[in-house]
Image (cartoon, rainbow, N blue to C red):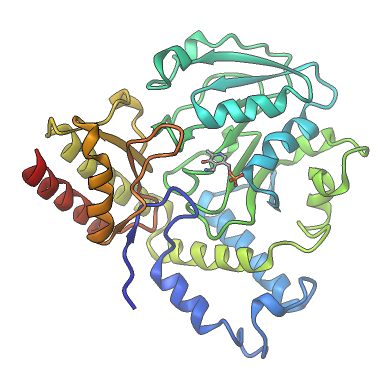
Length: 359
Ligand code: PMP
């Protein structure tokens, strides 16, 4: 067996220890005689896994009792519709910040449910920066303010939050658990699991309890946040194996020293990679340095005719999936929590050697 360094933006690399533990428990989970995949979701065994995942996540992010942790389905893309369907009820409009491809998709879905006020956009700057919070055209009577603090495709990330009385709803799909956040500042957080949490198939949702009162009874049952909360995320069969893997990833993260420790590692990894890009005139990253993502690092070659060769040689060197998103091209290294510093260093070493050979 030879595992490579996997820079995929998602589904992304998982910690090897987690995969090994899942492997060791695959046929017989804790003496149950069956795999987690084969258990009733209503069994005491699976209920204990679900409870453990919730408890660990609450500890890792210091989530208070004012919030419900939900495991939703359909990917973060379904949440783009599910959020306005639940939270715009009783309101005329919602506010959205536009910082890139994922914000744009969220806006497109929300428009199907009501009026969307785009409070600011960096589209005319090619989404290479984040509009100043002071420039936001906020309507304080709107349902909420939606943000995407890490644009996975563009490689743009911001950490602060604007001052507003509106509940802030944030798509943290590609940054959750990579840095410390103050959950109490959000109305709702959601994140597709397949980057920093586990396999695809489950969406982590953290919803302030008072917002659940907005969900109308006329909503499709499986879309209703209040019903999902009331049923402990089990209106129907949840993605049991994905939740089990998420619990193992949370356990791994606790063993790493939690979010604070992994954030320091993420700072070291991203700084090393951006330094390698900045120190060379062969590679470049277009993002405003104040808003460069720690998780997704896009870069291009000064001579873009070498891109195909770069990708071919990097793959052969055991550095997998470095191609940028199909909509933007170039290269992108996604370096989520599970990517070790050794993987980032191997990429940097390869970049130096490629430049020496072809620069
Ligand atoms: N939001 C962000 C920030 C993402 O990166 C992605 C997926 N890459 C999505 C939403 C959509 O997630 P899904 O494919 O789970 O619907």
